[in-house]
Length: 258
Ligand code: F6R
Image (cartoon, rainbow, N blue to C red; front, side):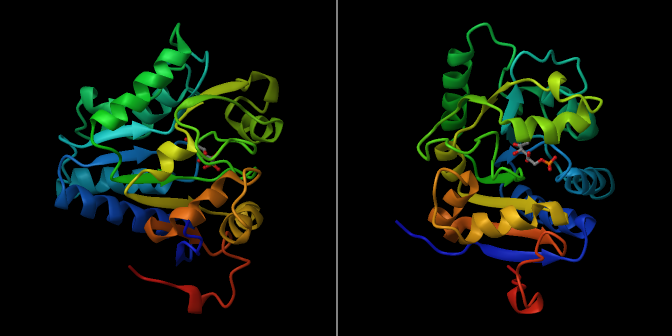
């Protein structure tokens, strides 16, 4: 199995990083109008979504045939709640572009049969021909999607238990109350994610510096879920802002343009 360093693409600011990733997405959509794109929620991709919306409105970037698959959704959080990823994605991105509702896929955390919802999601990705480009953020626990430490590398879409650290980190979206953060989520698994043809992991801010370094340099192991990306490094690029790249010196020498 291959183990090497994913490519690095460094930006000065969070905003610049988001714009660069939006350009990668725009290029894919232009080359392949029915591309399958995996998306993430949270704060990290905010500037990316803003730039994609701008490109749609000002340059006519066409999403009408693009198929979207989000990484995850909380279990048991109704979709009319602003913290649900269905709500977040609609407000932050989908309602501003021309994506077709039938092309938007987000795991069904409100399903009566959650196991069946996981299996259906995995099948829908397969039926779409697999993910062309997966966008990822990274949690301070090293999670990608909601694959927390200890998740087997061969996991497919499944129900995950959120770590206490992740619930505390996400309390900022729930009025600061960690107890309001759901304890479970449906998430694409690590195997689902690493099957994507191209992967972009984004991280910004000093608080992500340590985990980004670990993900890139520790021997791949289940305690640092994002370290699995080293095993597929040839198709992975880490887009970092200056603060998240604080452990990578000298800064300029590592700057790689693709
Ligand atoms: C979100 C997701 C998570 C986040 C991660 C970082 O769909 O899968 O892995 O990407 O928790 O969150 P932020 O960007 O809020 O720091």
